[in-house]
Image 1: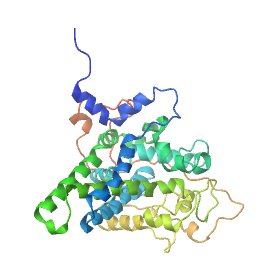
Image 2: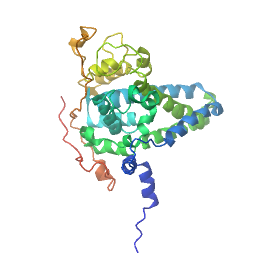
Image 3: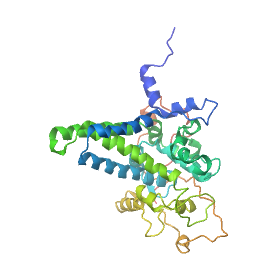
Image 4: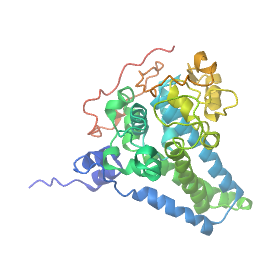
Length: 360
């Protein structure tokens, strides 16, 4: 009799395959129930290891650097590019940006973008997945993403992204890049301990500070936009949701705190509409534009810069956009061909790839 039980290798692949996990969760009847986020809980508890591994300025500096770079990966890539397509780039640099965003350990690019587009469509209504006015602070801050109904990637909301097999691969195996980063930091710490002992660091210390602490602080920094920026701050525009501008949240999230601006007009690359509204993510994207790596950054319309407040009798629905793809003629081999048998169980209705468009 033929043995039909899955092999050990296939079990390991399935454990890392978030699309396979999501398919299993969709079979449960209680989609509102949240499943215990064991990896995140373990990561959070592991931050106490800082009291055992000690402190060094080099490990602390790496933690701060990776917080900033990976925050840009969320704000400038997952949010302003994948979610809203507020600028254009080439096919190869899109993948490089996706790797950067994925290193933040906040799931894959398609999952993130799909849920964010859903948020804009239903902001602060009962359908919103993370509204503090609907389900409270903790649900908006962190519990929402572990509900069964939110585990799956809503491919129907990101058809422009699901055409690209390299992005589908990152989305399915979204823990590979963060784990590789963590291991690389440990190796870096061991290298520095061996050849530059005066720096006072080692592999475990570099892993704890550079990866564990930096990742946990980064997560909570990003989550404040869901939980706090709809509660605390000022409202320049009278949107139908409760989005607010908050300068402090803008600082710790590199510009995302200008949330009322963004919900009034999300097509702009810049979220700090005025010069005094610091938007570090936008400055970074302008630098990439100068280097020729990104282009066509969408500006803030002049009509929004003249009056400082929307007239009291005007109600503006938060913008919701499902953009069309626009890429350079950069061709790379499809991962579906390189990795046979790994076709997503959730992507049966999505074409393997779409046509690349010319530079514009």
